Length: 167
Image 1 (tube, rainbow, N blue to C red):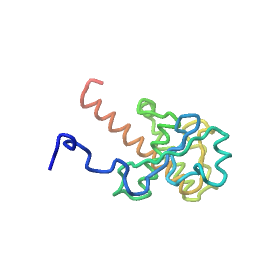
Image 2: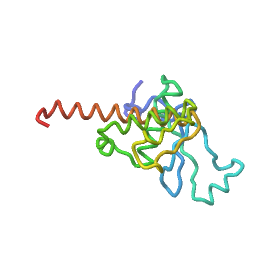
Image 3: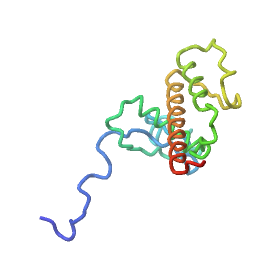
Image 4: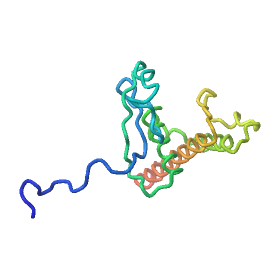
């Protein structure tokens, strides 16, 4: 029976019963990273080291990615990290019309493939300091995120062209 008190009330628990998809890592009150693995938290060995450096308890994130593979989730989380932590944006990505996002993705893919002996720097489209290769998995995540950025950039460009054919 529905009463005025229960009408419109949420029927689902606001916090999912499953494990979080990711964790927001917070330092000095702002998100500084996003991790797929549970980071150190209060009560864990070594937490005092992080607390002294201004870290707060990591916040769980439920992103609604239930049906996506872990690899896709990792790539999407990396893209979100690039936006949230590194400050990238659609407006900034829209400036890269010369294939820079694709070239950067290609460099990370070559690194992920273990072709470190290949000279990839000539293909890197930006300052050398922006290239931050990690292990093979992290390189794949970065490449995925850059490909998503390029696909989104192209979709926005096509949308603008359709709405303003004279542009």
